[in-house]
Length: 267
Image (cartoon, rainbow, N blue to C red; front, side):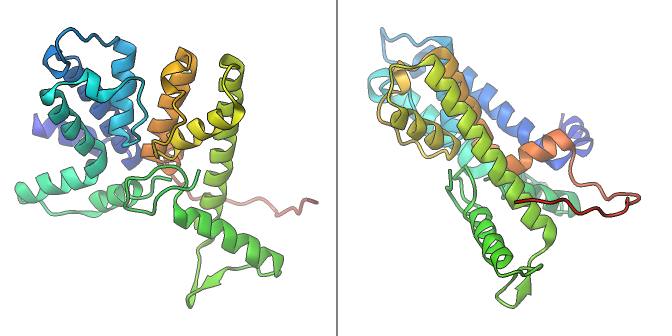
């Protein structure tokens, strides 16, 4: 079994491994929350609410569609604590433990996984934290780029170091994608749930994407479509937009040739 898992991991990119891990964690969490003993006697929870709860806890967000204390038993609390570790500890902390347990060295591929897993990305936590959304380092790179661009500098220097152009482009791409994603989510929920104030919907979307868990209390009253949007935001916020982009595009590829450079008028 371990050899089959190792072969599967070796054939996948780091972004695919990380995405697969969190998808697997959500599936396992759904199965755990489906055990009758996790709920108090006489309490029923729909399958969709179970899925929403699993995604929320694995992503360490905390948005809920029901009162946890009125729904789950003491055994259910222990299951919640266990599921929180799936997202809180992360794939690399767990994998590192097993690598050390079985006496394996952490090679180049494992280091790549650590770099991707530690760079998930509204503005939330710093790298290596469990916060989602746009990382503080990404936001800082955007501010530095605007500042140096306004001064006419072609390169960005800070703390006696020059930042790599790829990191600048990645931070801009992530920020733009995050803004577009959150704006589309707000517009979609405003269409499906017009009865809720705009500010409450904006807070809900930013909270889900940033895996923050703040809410004005409208989460249980949202439509199925709106809750599905929140689940997608929570999941993307947890794995990070960097991982999402690498999962879709397969990572960075060096061009084998270059065309003549053309300047474009902008303003």
